Image (cartoon, rainbow, N blue to C red):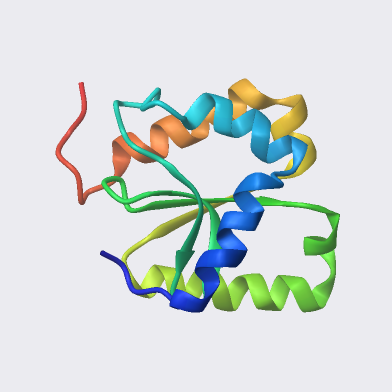
Length: 125
């Protein structure tokens, strides 16, 4: 199990109940092991962060960024977050929320490929 701040659990639970439209659309494509039979979790605490989606077997984190992530202070914070997650051996994929809503199939294809390329998991057929 990856380390996380236990104090984040109630906030993560709240976020799962209040997902954005983009998160809801992508969750419909990730849930129930639809990609390579892999289990994805939503709003998962890791370290001192809550990631949007996490697949432990593929060592994959998926973040959906709203417009606030375009601001310089958010970009710096996201870079630190990605670096911390990378130190755990996790690959972070970031998508713009508009991209998820307008190009859902393309986003899912990128996730599908990333999940199949992960060297920590056996090759998928």
